[in-house]
Image 1 (cartoon, helix red, strand yellow):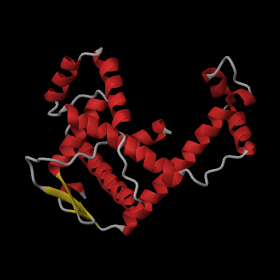
Image 2 (cartoon, one colour):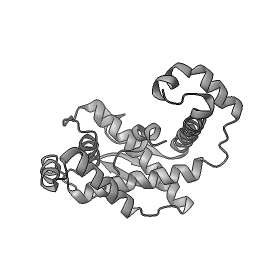
Image 3 (cartoon, helix red, strand yellow):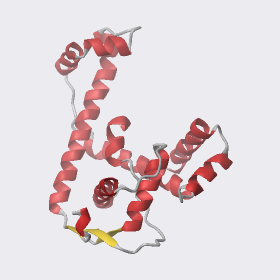
Image 4 (cartoon, helix red, strand yellow):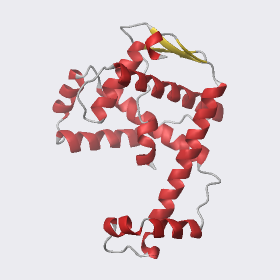
Length: 213
């Protein structure tokens, strides 16, 4: 589930002090500024361990993520679902610290500063990811059902890939839980994407900068 949703929703929603006040778009009553886009790119590049890149196509992609995230925020507010997940976010922070920086907080802070970020901004982003995943699971999982026939059809269609991925036990019975989880995640993701498309149609979205239209 997390793998399927990461590229769509796992970009930061971090609005704070700004140095550039140009409004790029308005979603409902919320303004998205150029500084929001630039910070979004910095955090996304840090998490993906990518070099800085502020090209216009990436800025446009960032703006669309931020628009989607504002719609998600509104959806969470209307559903009364905006809880905090501090301990889980801290665990993700610690895992990133261990995996990429060998546990050296100094090295991580140096890299964050190089990208114009702080550890609190990173923690805020990680917590946002968890909140969104919980919102999606609670809002779009109910009613998702995968039948035994669908599991068998998937197994027959992907038997070669499954045997390579799970050589020790690639029988239908052995991989059924993984297949069911995959199919459920795909449907939850589709439900979420359909909801986002509907919210975009129902919400006033105004682009203020010509090159971002």
